Amino acid sequence: MVTSSLTSGLGAGVSALHKQIKNNQQDKLSLAVPSIHSYTQTHSFSLEVKLKMVVKVYGPVYASPKRVMVCLFEKEIEFETVPVNLLTGENRRPEYLKLQPFGSLPVIQDGDYTLFESRAIIRYYAKKYKSQGTDLLGKTIEEQGLVEQWLEVEAHNFNPPANNLVLHIMFSPSFGITRDENLIKESEEKLAKVLDVYEDRLSKSKYLAGDFVSLADLSHLPFLNYLVGPIGKEYLIKERKHVSAWYDEISSRPSWKRCLEYGFPFEFK
Ligand SMILES: N[C@@H](CCC(=O)N[C@@H](CS)C(=O)NCC(=O)O)C(=O)O
Image (cartoon, protein in one colour):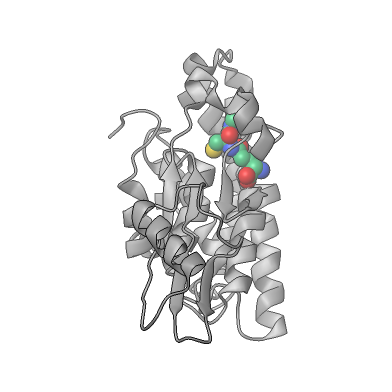
């Protein structure tokens, strides 16, 4: 989206720019704008042109992009989404691989700044807009350390078994993966042990890093949502009182409800 405001006389170049802005209401790439999120240029003759670049998030129906989107909503960062269909291999096309050379979702584009890896993206925006929207990083260095600790736990302890369950129960037919019952059983056992640690932690604090919601909590939402929904593992959450209360709390945030409106790769109840 491009916005402009003019307050006085125009030079020829500026007039041309204004005309171009009017012709490019949606910031098409033909408009030579600076590569930053939001830009305000004030000219000596009181002309103010505001050019606003909207963040693009690729693949909004999938889980890892939703990890990014929930944080963007919390940070009140405007974004638009670009559909990418994993099931038809759109993520293997050369244009997509230029943005994300491993072919995974998500990737974001912010002007000409491109970033992939969902947790790198959420850390980037939580730092860049620390004082805008919800502070998701913690106030003190100690709080920030705990946010980082639990974000790492999500990535390395929670996500691998949860991801195996999702892949083998939900996606195996569409991705041509042979459903591996042993892996499903083993992953569920691993995940149950991880959730026992969470139960203990959440009996002592409302959220993972303390009494404030953070990146660490929100980062769990996409795969928790699959577990309680299409994967049929809701009992893993519900049978743990504190984990259950935590899930209810974070999944009822308006930011997450807005993510759900973008839909899923498959229809499910
Ligand atoms: N570590 C990556 C993992 C992303 C990921 O696994 N994305 C899935 C969608 S939720 C995907 O793109 N899978 C297809 C593929 O990697 O080829 C991140 O967090 O961004």
